Length: 222
Image (cartoon, rainbow, N blue to C red):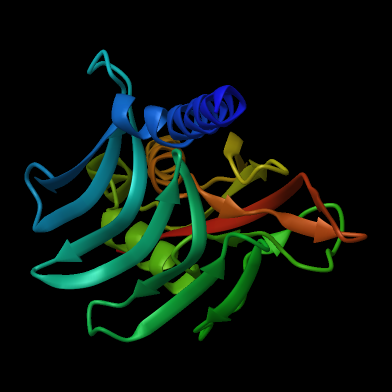
């Protein structure tokens, strides 16, 4: 009888330990759904955050959606602050623009009706691709580029070429003007690209992610 009781206690102790190991972290952290309208825009974000027990640290964790005028433009999933699974990006017309598999770091679909951005130094097995798609980034840049008054006054117009360094992690840095047309245009082009071309699927070479440099055109029309 004593051995049986000892065995029962041991089983209970193991169950308690397993419960603590599996469920204690979940109890200490809460998942909260958030709906947020981006100030001054028609964009609404619906996402989930993991909140630490001290209610200070909050990270994306769970489904994420971005709506524009109640139409979904982005659908995806976060796991502990990192994009995971398949993310889908849509045009304002609701058409699929791009799908990225973040588990395998592959572009599943890209509605490329424009040529990919030119890369400097060499060609890659897979060129760097902006998250959201080439068309999406190009439209963002085009919608923000406006010929400055002083450039218009001096008769300057045309295309500014901005270089961007895309790291093996997909972050963008090292923005610089490769070919300029006017100081005001060059400065505006740098600001636009630095604000919009921030997240990329990195270039692939020899089956590894590698750093690359890409050239992004910004057009200023009369």
